[in-house]
Image (cartoon, rainbow, N blue to C red; front, side, top):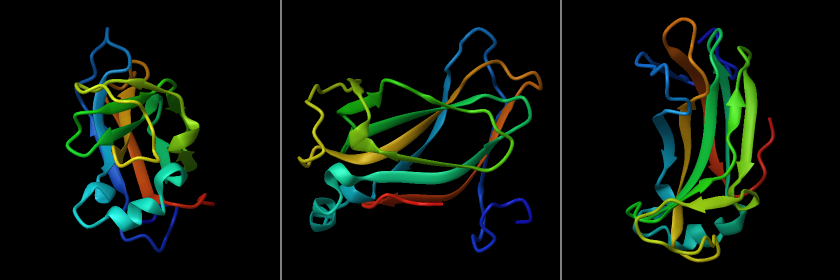
Length: 158
């Protein structure tokens, strides 16, 4: 609690990866995923998000670690996937605010079922940030902390 950026937050998410391959940069470890808008009965709420879907959070990395953030949009059931062409590095040991509007990114089609990327349709309704290794950690593991993870239909501010 004392190390959290937002003292009103009940807890922050601590993630640690002990199995770091030495010869495979950008290894995918885990992800933070919001499938809420794909749930049954969320069609009305989805209409207020679409091209104005934002994901924001506070994050800090561990000593000497480089974590890469890779944003994705997925269809309900995850058969269609679009991965952002660029990744953002987390290198700072201090809490840093990250925010992204998914419609501002350029995507590659990663899905088993190929579909055009379009947030104005019902196809892409799951949002994710993939956590990947950026480089080999000198301590043998990568760690990161996340707090105040939010999916909004307005631009978030610190």
